[in-house]
Length: 157
Image 1 (cartoon, rainbow, N blue to C red):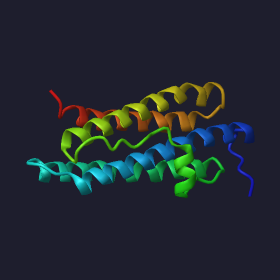
Image 2: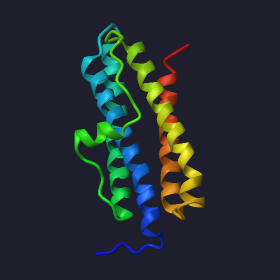
Image 3: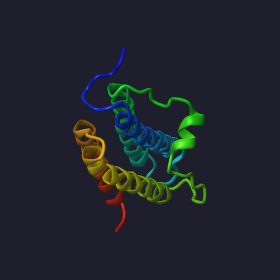
Image 4: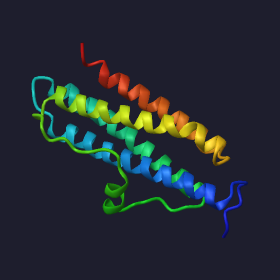
């Protein structure tokens, strides 16, 4: 059935394309946070293990909400590893030990990258694509990532 929500197909496609990139970034960040949870070592193992679990649980909810937003505007969410890896802006860095500071630094950089990507889409979603709903949605996601980044950043002096 045709999606009739007051936004033309071309605009919904453009928004969906940007959301697909965001979903890919969220998935890669989720996976990297899982990696930190699974592989953390050091004297702060337990506290960091628990901390990373809280972070990946929050990212899991974010991923689901982004995929559902794509569906709400009438498109399909990318859902294969091949698709997600083609769409993501993030990279994996394997140049640190499995210590908390290495993981924290890399995850913080990724959250900040996602924040910048989201911030760059808030206005165009409204002004260019007539989609205030998605603009509002990603504004909330940006604020969530800002909070998560703050938690990561707070581990540094």
